Length: 569
Picture 1 (cartoon, rainbow, N blue to C red):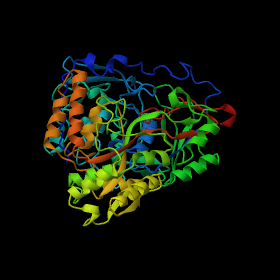
Picture 2 (picture 1 turned 135 degrees about the vertical axis):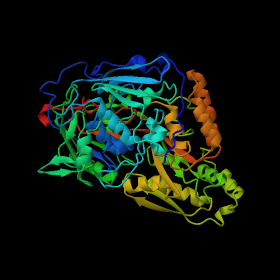
Picture 3 (picture 1 turned 90 degrees about the vertical axis):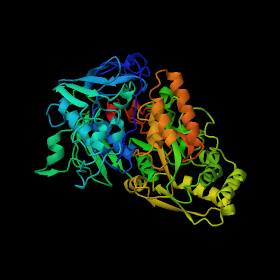
Picture 4 (picture 1 turned 135 degrees about the horizontal axis):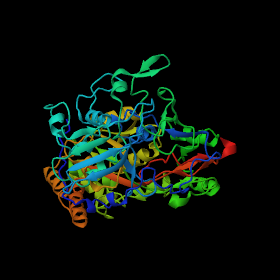
């Protein structure tokens, strides 16, 4: 289903984005509090945060933000990006790793004290099994019992044997091997030094085979693993997921790293961001997104987070640091009339991004003129030439497409996930399109249903955001635009782009590689497969009982370091 186009980067280990050179010790230094142990006045209480309904919390198929928040709490990957500086590697389930000279063999030594939340040891075979679930197109969704291939399989596309499994010629990936209980070896087809970044994806975690296949014991019965995953993270599920209501976790007593300060995390599920914000105002949530139009007043009333806007404490509670992500409008390139590049260009030119940023986000975002956000190699201000507001040029492009003044165009459907604050954005876009003669109607859906519609290309125009799981140009350009990749929601396909993406991965010099990605980016922009709108920034607020709540530029909450004031626990 997802033929891998991953090739190679012939890099020496010393040039791997400086990541391997800055790996931390297994527990790392606490960037906020130093190496302080858990002390009594910090330990206790439940952290209550809002999320939208996840699509999955079974990590094999978790690639969206809401499910990843839960996975981040209850699982630990081999290595992961530091919450303060994503270019620094922290050890998770691994205590060390080694890469051979030509970057084809990656060997990870696991923590021998690693345990799942039921007390069973975490061994290398648990990673082998988990990674094969991700790669196999025959993996069964434990929630539904149906075959449901992973959308994150491309993260392992460089591994030897990936294509054979994807094409049905093999049952397991030959390049993923347990050398012994505590040694995992991953072999690639060709040198690919940056593969160490792929390994940091939050869903590349171990899972216990028996519980996946036979269910998880709970209250005298068994529940599907997808409802109550058992992981190796700092927290564990307290009960099965209650869709539309909550996901309750408690501290994992078997976690091998430093324990979290709080006793548990209560993920409160809201379909509507405004409803969650009202609940925060009522004192029922410790972390919520600020409603549209409220950011400035919240900053004035509750203060701005320290650490460049990433770490909240009482009196400095608004987290507004920049994120390594882009908000964009999707266009279904496979369906007429959107298969016409002139129609797509007209849509891009018609949208007033500045108005959206000012009216909806209170100028807190940065208007996007590139699909790559700042901080990602290859980013260049203004590189997407049509990512600008020019109504006259938009009308001309629509006429060039044969639909002057919108004549002959059917009503367009603007799809979105309802209740998450996107309605005002799509309404402004609806009005912008009307100005060039394009009639549009909104179609709001529940989040998981909406993601399924995007996967199936069952939409015309939609919206989405893409957040870096690790700092990589390839994570944007390959995942969003390479042919036949699961996350290519637009259906864009360009043989030259595919070839150049593969070529870029063979370039060892970082500057040369960034220049190649700029060239690729220009080719993609010329066809306007999607419409960049803005670069993300956090719009979150904490309660005044919370301390050291850090949300990274990659949108990861540092669940282990946040703590609740003793008399408010």
